[in-house]
Length: 392
Image (cartoon, rainbow, N blue to C red; front, side):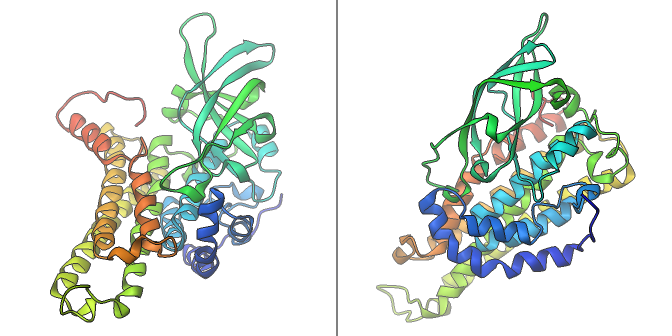
């Protein structure tokens, strides 16, 4: 695929903003279907939002994480599930770029290819001639219904000590389990996938410990700033925009209803005249501002390290996780304030703020994004102890 003109960050954000009416109109249907609508996926693809982490030699944009942050936030501002899916697709798409270049030729031969994935090693791999055979199941695979490939993690049990591997598998080789019945992020289609005796050739396999240390197999991407950063900081920076955008979307939804709302059983005929409302809006907005600070500090670190090609200190790696956790916590707190101030009428399905609240609750429970887990990890290292996880 020939290279294409690369849009600027502002151009990509503008494209995302132009999609907002469509995304809002499709959001309720996506919740009903428990997956994004085909129309939403088509619109996101036509806007080029699935190309942000694709190498330029395949027609991609090689966008930095600050661009991912701003674009995902803009999409999430209209529909949290759509923004989440855009953000999450960007991570395994980037992971695919760590494989040998011949493997990338195969993956990126599909225009606007969509790659889903996970970091959980919930499958087993056994050695076979020319590769491995994988059996197992992975849950929470966001965007799986519309994906072409999946990055899977499995534990390889060769002679000797078992270790996790990362592999690329076509979705046609996997089974999809329609089990996404949830309270939040319903529209993300985060179903489970299953491998039954699936053969994976050796060239589509990488040892996960090496990947986590930044040891990649692509020669063509070696000098590109966005592909010479460790996986976990990349994943953290790629995820922050979705949470930030949901909080902004909740504020938009609150303010849109505000002029016509009164506070029942009080003398306030308009909610916007109540001092309590002023305090609530101010507090929520300041939390959104704080969330944006942490998200931007995170992306600034990742992008600067990629540009410089410099090494990462341990404290920087765990602070990346902490900044993500802080972004999610503050975004959820802001949304909770506004949702609590929205009255009984806000529980109806066609009132968006209840959906933003549920979606952010789901995001905040994600293992990589949980504020408490990330704060504990950061504090542990600040106290002079070794991290108790490889996921840094």
